[in-house]
Amino acid sequence: MRIDFHTHGKLAKQLPFSTVYTDWLFAQAKSAGLDAICLTEHFNTLQFDELYRYIASVSRRAGDCLELENGLRIFPGMETDVAECGHILSVGPLEAILELNRRLAPYKAKGSFLPFAQLMDLFDQYPVTVGCGHPFRAPGHVPEQPVEQLKRLSFLDLNGKDIALDRARTERLTYALAEKLELPVISGSDTHQAVQYGCISTVLERDCTTFDEIFSQVRDGAYRIEVAQQAAFQVQTASLLKRALKEIHALGGDYVSILTAKTVV
Image (cartoon, rainbow, N blue to C red; front, side, top):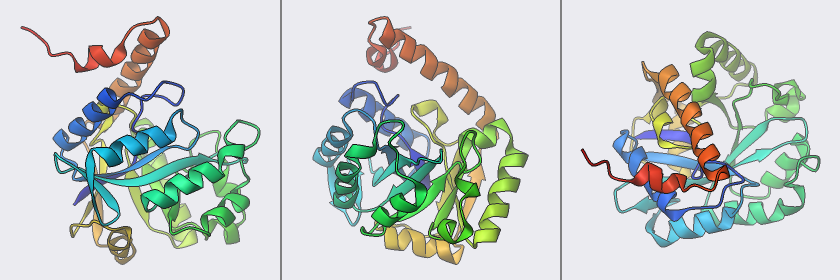
């Protein structure tokens, strides 16, 4: 099963949720060869609940995942900022993710993010699996936290955006920290739009519908990480496209219609 462990369902946190855009994203994910994604949407994105309610309404529940009509399996998750600067990924049953997001409501503004240790204390109360997203991306400082705190994590994210920028550095630092903490490394594209899907992915040996099945294989090493030859180009193109689409929105245009319009030759 080919899975992307770090993805988003919106173009940007401050843009309104669009069902059309999200449908387009998930169709593109399937076209890119993915069987599943972890939807690690930003915890302070606008309309977080609406995004997940919509997905639940157009999918069927299969274990822990939400399976779309096209066969793509969406495993619920969230990406949370911490006071020390850095992003923490949590994945788990939809109900747990939604409740955690509600409990984090007082801590969503910059300047009020929870410290790493307190956030981990909160996550410990729920059936979620927690890892560090792009641990060495500036200005993050999660790797500098006490080792006894970092060992509360369950995985590290080998991030497609960072791989595209400097693969050697990203792999060297991420795997060194993983070895120190005795944690597995899994991969995520960190995409907010479709071009970036497939730049990096994790291939599990067996099909999964539950987090227990996924992380049992991860702990056993029954997977491999694949980086696309064109990863750097994909990420660069995605970044340019994201900026252009946000500018279209800022000028009052409809970026969703532009993306989803059928080209007439």
